[in-house]
Image (cartoon, rainbow, N blue to C red; front, side, top):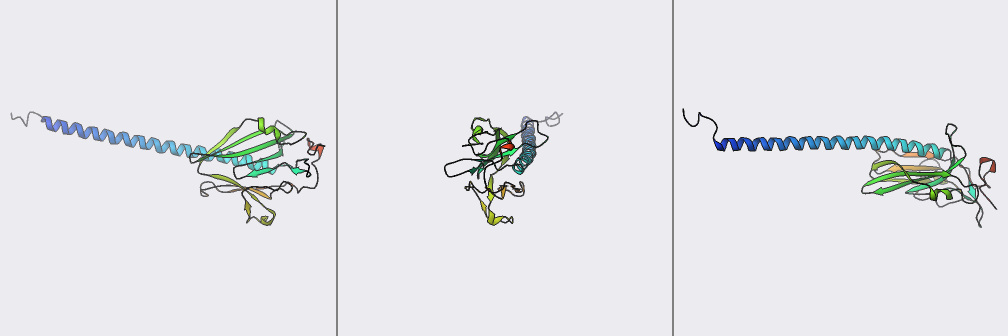
Length: 217
């Protein structure tokens, strides 16, 4: 019996072990890549679901926004403020809600490391003074986390047809915007949300029967 027929040489064994090690590393990398893709897809699906819920909440509450106002030296001003990264307003609760009365709402878009966090805080509207004041002590709650940038914009009277112009910030405290736009950088993933506002133009103080005194002396 020759040395060759007796078995593998040491060199052949080492080569085989090296190939097995390389194959194991390749399989491990494939498993990690697959797991990473699965985690990314899961995060993306969860982000999409969270954003749909957040969009629905924003649209529903904005649709119930009220013309609550507060008195200033220059006259009554609308309890509504908005910028590209957030907005505040007062809305009536829907009939099915357990809590009744008027609530002050604040939605905020917080950019962080290539993502945007959509957060909300809510508090009972003040019955005297600034209806939005109680928001300062209310805790924030995260609604959604999405990849990319989200922003808000506001439709003026001139753009009531739906084609703009959209303002990045709403500065007029006597006339409300006609609509609010929530849009992302990637319109294919996050289609724009346009919510028409039914807040009437400023013509006086809000009715106290609605549950709050909007223009106290």
